[in-house]
Length: 280
Image: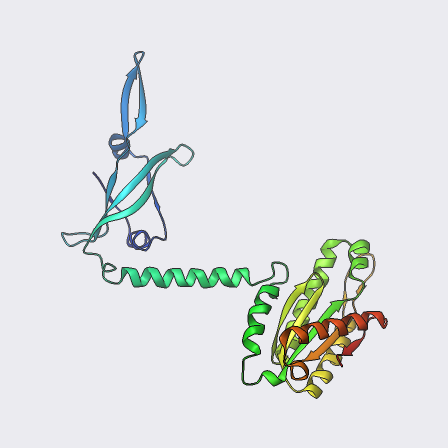
């Protein structure tokens, strides 16, 4: 069984299953240990010995930590001039500080990775704001909060977005969406809420605030968006939005609240765009 000395960081990463590979430069020692010569037609050729187990150590002295680990495969990388060891399950471990709390550390790492994956899944790739999947999850929480009577739904849709894509190209269409998402994040914070990319060029703010404050702030949001333009070599791109708003206190049902806000948005579009409509 081969014995390999590795540094502390790599040793701990192997124990915590963060890595499953180690490499060694192709020195004379490792050539001797890993290459097996055979004679074919009076010529010497070499094949890599395959071993089933490795002993990995860290540190010096008799009390140094060590593990016996399954070795699945050994490969040679000619470009890097290295031997690569693919590792499997740990068979034995001795004098490892991680031995007692190994499971706790592993669980903690897995939970951290799970949280990072969930965050990635819940984000829109282009704008980095939350997506519809996260909105649906949050909405189910929001309607059960003590302040649910202050919950509002604000749909925002970029006017004539198809024309922007056709005249200026999809790259600039993306810039418009990123600009809108950043502006909406600012106002969602003011409104004590969160913004989501609902679909295409349509966004949704779910927020908790009084109706009068919401109306005043949404009106300011619409004008603020229209005030700034996106630069393009041909001409600056003007942006306006249509907005539909509904209030949870009017319906006491999340699905109806969203439907009413969407209907208000469609009405704002029909009224000539660059308009705010509040559900009745």
